[in-house]
Image 1 (tube, chains in turn brown, purple):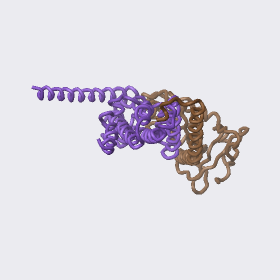
Image 2 (tube, chains in turn green, cyan):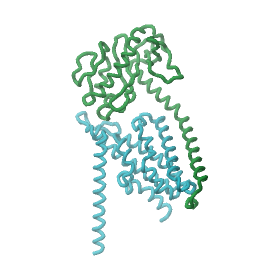
Image 3 (cartoon, chains in turn yellow, blue):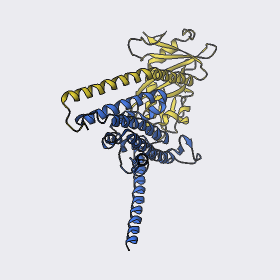
Image 4 (cartoon, helix red, strand yellow):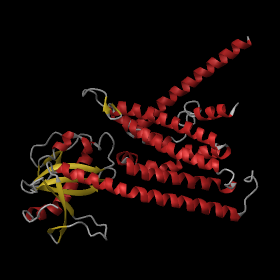
Length: 215
Length: 213
């Protein structure tokens, strides 16, 4: 067997060089082959989430907030800044049903990213979907699927302000009943919504009627 | 022993007799971390299977080409390539599973089962035996993860593969899908395995004594 005798340095360098080269080629191929599918999956997931948080909507349009005004259009493609995007959601006749507002912020363990529907006419939050979170399984991750918790967001008044209250003590329409055992995660969701509300609501409320038709 | 018998033996030993989790106790980190549901356990098992079979095949085919001094480095390059390909594929084909497994897919690179099989087996055996060994070990790993994941999901969420098993009156034992539940389930399983082994040894030695008498 040739590997018994010690190989010289040239042989070592060549072997590792070839291994690295071949491995690199395989990785680039795999990346190019899968990347479009991965991006399409993400876009599809986001779109489905928009239609879920604004019930009844079937088309959407992307807006950005610039200088306190809502302008149609997506992010500037050069910079990856997705900070000021909201989505207008329309029914099949082109009537604006509400806006889907994406947001993210710190949760109990990692960043929670979510999207929620806002109806500027009734000044109410009309739906919530957690896009990504790593909350504690069995406790904090209930923010993703617990139907009781999500009922809070089916018709949640934003005035004077969305607040989280202890489990079972919700009385006012602007209060969110926290999940028992997951108060921190519940509060995190509410504080993300508060943050996004502060940023977008005045713009969305004043943009009423000037948002144009869906694409 | 014929070649075929040897191949069969190398393949089946990983299922149970030399099961990587319960007997060799290798790769416990992913085994504890991702088994909070049965489907996650199986997905992890399949990812490991792909990586292990691929790398065992390559390592044993190249075993006379790779110089001894840099064998570990080369193994790692081969393993890391397969892991990254598996990572991309899973992300494209099964985004929800990928999200659940998170960093543990990338961490297959440092899974000791894989490097261990390359060093202990694939680098010294023919391609057929190496692939047989890899199939056996990864099936054994998947079985172990499926058992762990099923136990934890049934007790911790009251469901199996996402299908609810009990009525609404069932109060899930949440600790079982949290990290401590992994250790508890693993500990109990290892205890059972040790007991079975002990019983078998006792029986064997009793038989031996009988024969001698």
